[in-house]
Length: 89
Image (cartoon, rainbow, N blue to C red; front, side, top):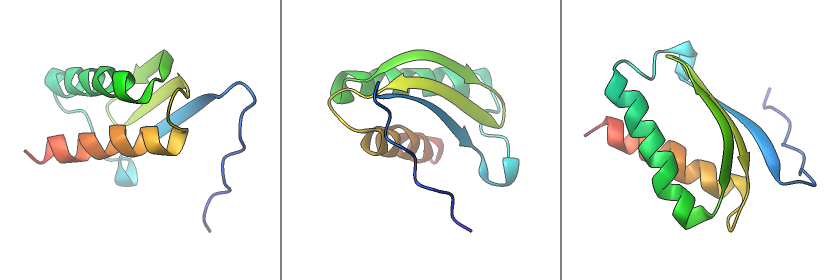
C-alpha cells in the first residue's frame, strides 16, 4: 500500500527521513557522510532551502528542512538523485 501524501505545512518546515532500500547501509565510510553534507550545501544555493538540523546514520538520514525557492519534492529529487549518481562514480 502506498504511503499517504505529505500534508502541506503552513511553516514550510518538514522532517524528512531517507532510508536505504531494505535498510541497507548508505554510508560506509567517512567520505560518504562528507559527500552528502557537501551535496546539501551545493543544492541549498540553487533551491533556497534552510536546513535546521540533520542526523546521518549508516542506513538512514533525518533532515529538518524549510522550503525555499523550490518545493520539497523538487529539493529531494535534487539531493537524493545526486547522491545516487555520485555513489555510482
